[in-house]
Image (cartoon, rainbow, N blue to C red):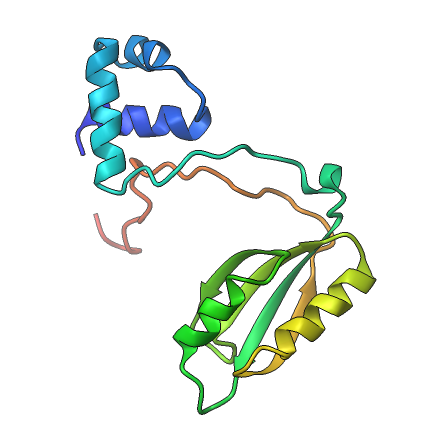
Length: 159
């Protein structure tokens, strides 16, 4: 990915609705050139989609929880992952290392809804138990990382 592609990705992360004309002005290319570059970024899987950012509380989803899923010893984790994709309220799902095999982020209207969702998760074949952490407040979320910036600092004592 060259500098122009990186600028396009950065601009689209900031505003996924930016027009090709806006992007062209930003990177100093023609609209058709930018359109072709964006198409190639999509084909390579760098850009995987476009979506609106919404306030969950404004949609009536005021409770957020992180739920760790401990699996039964005999289950294939991939099957559980497929079953999780069909559970309403699950916003994000990660296969992780540790005591839990999966961590899901859920958004629900209230505690009663969370209780029903927990019952549904435990009812999934292969899930032995859950561990729930309620989110009290969100400091930041959906943050765009600076993928062009070096993130590793030199080890102490090295020049």
